[in-house]
Amino acid sequence: VQLQASGGGLVQPGGSLRLSCEASGFRFRDYGMGWFRQAPGKEREAVSYIHTSGGRLNIDSVKGRFTISRDNTKNTVYLQMNNLKPEDTNVYYCVRLRRGTIYSEGLNPDRYDDWGQGTQVTVSS
Image 1 (cartoon, one colour):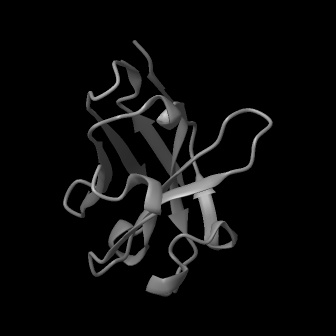
Image 2: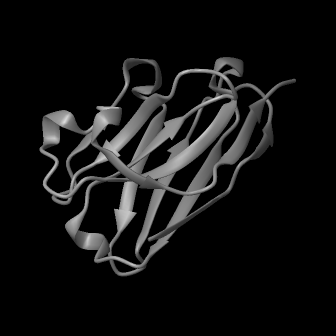
């Protein structure tokens, strides 16, 4: 399993970034996918989840600002982040959830199976 995240960077408050994660080594369409963020020494925080059916979940702090999507033809999951805030600064990781994860468990880190290296997002003026 390989998950390659990209698209992070430095952006001013109110700006936008689009993260991408290209997956390989497994049948992408059969798995729920997500994004979490984690700073060194801090707790992992689930951010967004997309079910195999396309159903989505977001944590409250990013609702209305972040949108997760997937393209099964490209084995890629995206995170469009708009109206970024300094508190969004973090390392963002793409994650594959355990096969069979039900929709309501999509933001439960206990369901995380594999993740790749993260991409740094810094929101600062």
